[in-house]
Structures are given as structure tokens and as C-alpha cells.
Image (tube, rainbow, N blue to C red; front, side):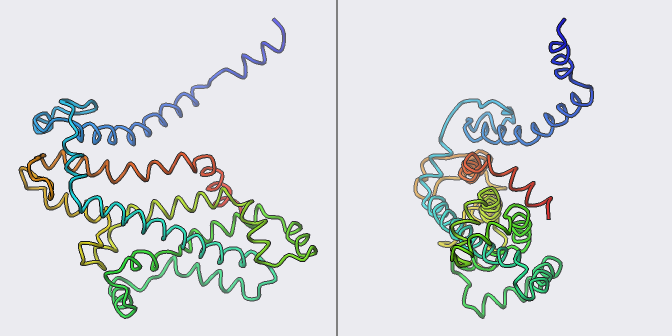
Length: 298
């Protein structure tokens, strides 16, 4: 047998350790996927089978009644659009603030950069608390506005430190020095050189910001009292809580169509989850690279 064939067989040999790792990864993956499949199956199953607790991974008595209830309910659709707008604003503002803070802190010529770096780091360990934050939002007249959901948490020191590490590890000083010699300004270097080379970390942090804002509802619970400004997650939280002891729920604008609370809750969960899941395919190729380089190096 040729030596090349022997070496190929050696390379293809799978050890017991690799098999165990694959099994563990498969189990962990199933713990994430199976609950999602279960909720989806309940959302498209007949109320009769759901009440009998006979729906597990496959739907029974396929029906889209619960989704019809959601789309007939004006509050759910309005909250969906509001959440999309808030998430987009939050992500854009957050990335602009993060980039403008991280880029200067990577430059040795910036006086006091260590002080500012430790100042940002300090905020990760200490906070004022909920009551002072509420009083601050009230004094700034941000209560019951969409900006109270955008501005307070738009800047993340943790994300800034990750981006700072990425820029230090992947943007050579010689590249910027060459641009300076050609007459480029700091802003031109950032826009035309640094940002195009930072796509992995930009995509990764944008995903962090978007997912964090999309799933959050605690701040809206504290700062928002107008139902017209309820984000989707807060509305879903209230719906689940309000319908926990009910036997039937009808849509607000189409009361003729009835659904059990459990089926409607499952449909609402899917309605709130699917949009943010659709974002992952567009940033997947950048995600792992951005997290590993930004978090490990530097």
C-alpha cells in the first residue's frame, strides 16, 4: 500500500475523545433546538391536542388560528414595528459610540488614554442602582419616550473593550502612518481604512447590541407606562402573565376567533423570536472570527 494512502488513513482516524466531544456538542445543540421545535409545534397545533398535553415535537391538528389572532391584534403588530425601530436606532447609535470610543483609545498619541480606559472599565463593576437611574431619566424628560429605550444603554463599555482589543491586534500602525503621510486625517483613516478592515468585529458587536435590545423588557417595564410605546417583549411578558389563569383568549380586534392561552403564548413567542433569528445568517461568517480575535488577543 502506498505511503500516501497509509498517511491518509491515519489522518481520517477518529479518536474516542473526538467522539465524546461530538456527542456532548450534539446533546447541547439538542437542548437548544428541541424547546424551539416544541414551542413551534404547539403554536400550530389544535387547542384540543395542546390541552391534552399530547403535543411534543410534531404538531397535531395543524392550524394557524393563533397567528391569525396575533395579526388581527393591532397592539402586537404595532409593538413589533416599534421594537424594530428601537432596535435599529439602538444598534446604530451603540456602534457609532463604541467605535468613536474604541478607536482613539488604541492610539498611543492620545494623552490620558489609560485614564479613560480605566474609567470605562470602572463602570463595568459599579452602578448607581435602579432608583437613581429612574430619577435621572425623569429629570431628562425621557420617561414614556422611545429614547429611554435607546440612549441609556446604547453604549456598552464591555463591547468597547472588545473592539479596542480587535483594533490593536489587527490594524497595524504602519498602515495608518502611511495614510498620514499621504495627507489623510484621523476621520478619513477611520472611515476608509479602519472600518473596512473591521467588518468581523462590527458585525459581531452589532449582533450583540441588536439581540440585547430585542430581548430586553425590564427597562421598558420601569420607564414606560403608555401602552402605545410598549415594546414587543414587554407586551409578550404581560400577555403571558395575564393569560396564565385564563381559559381562553380572543384577539382584541377579532374576538370571534378563540385560542387557548398556551397556544397563543407559543405563537407570540415564535412571533417575537423569528425576526431576530433571521439576522444570524447575514453575520454568521463574521461572528466567530470577531468574537475570538476581539476577546482573546490584546
